[in-house]
Length: 152
Image (cartoon, rainbow, N blue to C red; front, side, top):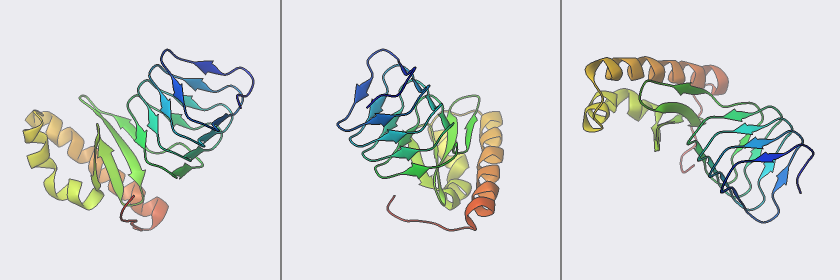
């Protein structure tokens, strides 16, 4: 079911039983799994992938390249930071992603320097992303009280 004034980018793939609210805009190459539900005024960037039965509330915005696993539910826009090289995003309580690599926030904070070097980040970019990861940790604790969910 598609709401009113829905705009689909090029090469969008919709799974079975997808429901899109009014004024939804999907970027190019977006893939929505079965049973996905998007509220009104949702914006998804290019190359976004949502697993089966993901639910996004009204007004949620996801930038380019964001991936959410099956049965994820966001009632408000998740945390996202577009850094100088890749996007940093909150994935689930206690977890975040940089580009397409998702780890526990504690693991990011412990290993960000080695991971950055392995992926060709400059020293300045490693420092930049350390600040983003620290802020992501602080917001995760503020929003979820340090709650973590394994296996998401």
